[in-house]
Length: 364
Image (cartoon, rainbow, N blue to C red; front, side, top):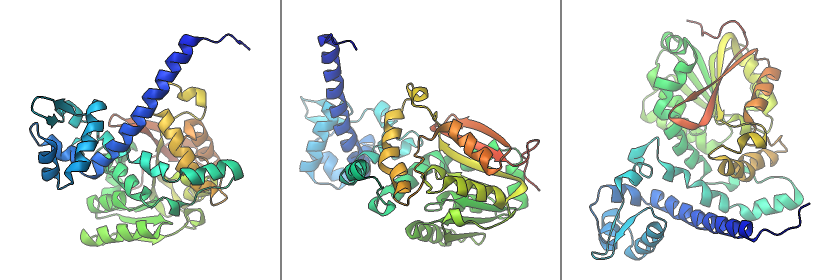
């Protein structure tokens, strides 16, 4: 072992840690800017004082002023000391506002305070094992629904479903579709609305999520979709569905292998399983150049992995990776797996899995 102390290396690392500290603080304040609508408000304002911004946003000026201090020193908002006005450059708004979807990075910043809220419980898991239950994350499903709206819902019909040949034609003609781990059901409702000839079912163990899906379906007057509270590891359908989808859901499961096996059984012989999951390697060295690897490992450790372990599950975590995903899909009975990616979604891969190696077209 080299015992020579490199002071320059130590100084560089100290500065790196200082940058991490400041960026972590900016992430928290960016989350607040998203949740309070401050970025959306500022994007439509000329250079304005803190009072003008607070009034336009319907917020308390003192808090807005301190938030603006973090935004200015974090180089997100620009400040004119002569006029004491603040401005959000349009080049920054393009990554921070709801109008910027699917490029709204401010939405993702919500994960930082959300995960920080369970830090004490995670520390105890490091010491004693076990996991933190899903119920300890009261806003997680809401944030996930927002993320899904950006990455899935916005491109579902036009880009995601066409990844599997003949899916659109089959959906137009009418097939049975299942979404496992459907969450709040927005993606399923969108499919049901777009393809009235097909019939859609959503399963999730979250009563809150299922209730939200039902409420939206009723508001949209959909008659071809149903939602049920169900542990997908107990899925007992056989060769019923022409299409089964799972959007960012499999790696959270307590029993992912059993879930995938039952999905394969529930799928018609000529059906397709469309699985969206994190685009990553199963090996840490394969993720060294991944632009979001530290964040994704953190989410995995502090949510995806721990909620599975809380149920005495496998604890795959969100960074289970393409290699392991391919192995689990093969073990479940899928003989052909293709992995595709979309330009608008740099975070996810789309697995097209079938039980027939020669063809993955859906039935008409």
